[in-house]
Length: 82
Image (cartoon, rainbow, N blue to C red):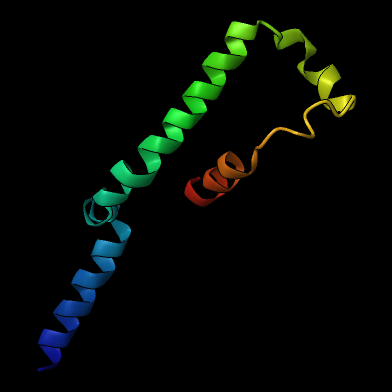
């Protein structure tokens, strides 16, 4: 009986260490949450690059010109996933 419990615990500990187990168990989250997040970030980057205002970013941050933009979704998803 003890050997069965011990083998289960060893397998459980090994599965927690392997990152492949995490991705295989939570692969549904990749399509539902992670891909849309990357799409959101990619869309924001493309929009930013099309405006060609890369040099003005730091000055605009100091002037608080971004106070009305919505960074909440991207910020919390970034914190949650990374």
